[in-house]
Image 1: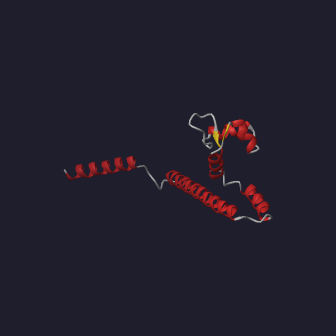
Image 2: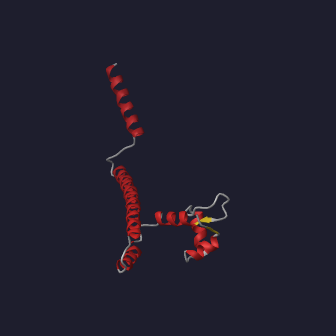
Image 3: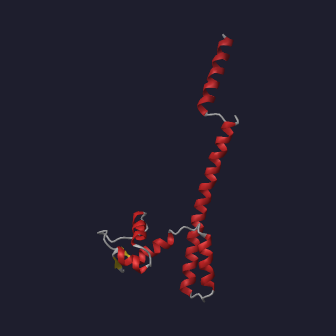
Length: 137
């Protein structure tokens, strides 16, 4: 287990210290128990696992660069794991979009009068029952 301070970790991954601070704030760095050092291997894996899969343009460019090089077995296994994480991200995002669409549909149906609230319906039924009972007496 390799540990580095944040400045050294930023130099290792060729990013700015500010970027590393953003990673830490968003919980994408694995820190030692005292919170002063970055656990390099675990942090690198966490950053890879939580990368935004929505950047297809960048992913395509990197894929083209990788295609020009012969992949090793280790690289192939990493690519399969990355694809699985991206599928999980895309599935989660699709599910969120699905429920947003359902909410929009409910709001539309309320506006056009095809959907009323449960409370309003209970009050209308109670009024009808009361009118029916009064007419029976």
